[in-house]
Image (tube, rainbow, N blue to C red; front, side):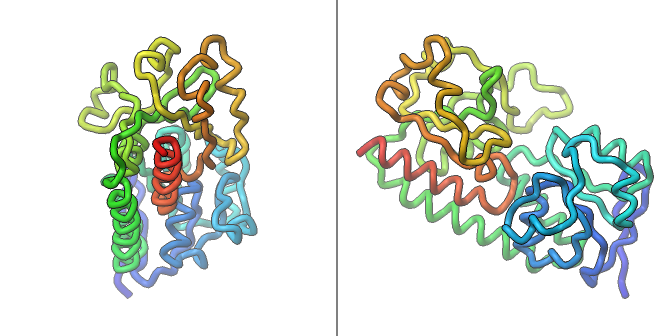
Length: 283
């Protein structure tokens, strides 16, 4: 039985190429990736937000996505713990200090998401499935891009990730907007941390004046944790926001945030939804 060691903060992880390692998936995106690669049988526990596919809800869940209790986690005796995105960086550091074998991934672009999937495949010894998943995602995006290429113009799209204060979606989301045929709200790289140089800018707070200057053709609410039930009034009830052209023309849409905010396989579905709304607005 061949072994590899992934080193994280000085902790050696004895990982097996036979895909039988005990996994704690503390990231909803990683949980989706594991299911897509048919590795769900090895998941011993997840975080509270791992809710897709539906059968993932039946897995043991640990409370508090960002402050998971180390002793509660230890009860599941995981051999590898997956964490993901900037909001879990402190958690990953804490769990490493507690001597867990932690893999922390922080993809900021579609290309980095592909790489994170390949990394998971390498760690678990199922590279062919990882490569197949990446190819499936690429095909999905290409299908949407082909359709988007037929639109007579590119609509301007503002995607909002949080409502108080208003925050524009950054990281990979502007790329998804482009693939769906739109012009994304610009996320400046000004003020980005030196360690993140060269990466896509993260989501950031925005002002009404910035949105007015951008004058989006449509607005999409992708509010973290709200799923598909975010209230449009979170935006339209703000002073001055109801006067935006997109709001006045009823071009305000709500998307299940897991289709845009999770760096995983269903981003292709998010791209399809965005394209559909852009096509609707233009016709």
